[in-house]
Length: 123
Image (cartoon, rainbow, N blue to C red; front, side):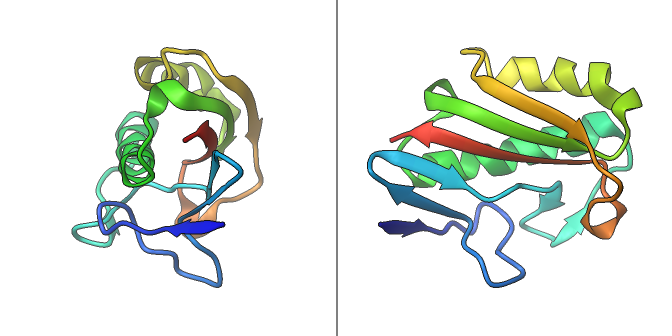
């Protein structure tokens, strides 16, 4: 097993890793819309937050030697299912290979955020 860590994505803020590689697959922790350069959330709309989440996922995928085309499964957490269509417009520009997906609304996300996404990808 190999731990993946990059400064191009937010650092883990608890007892977990940004991602792990095991048996040829990357298992990434849920990514939230924190800008890794500033440590802050730069926007308050689903579109802005989803874009930052995708940038963070991209950085982890790159650090692991893979990319969005190799993602086989995503799990998406939305604070409000009313944001589903707007979220999908951002999501579909990154996940063009259409991986398997679960998308659920949750009661709350850390820091009152609007979105969190985790991925599993081939390496």
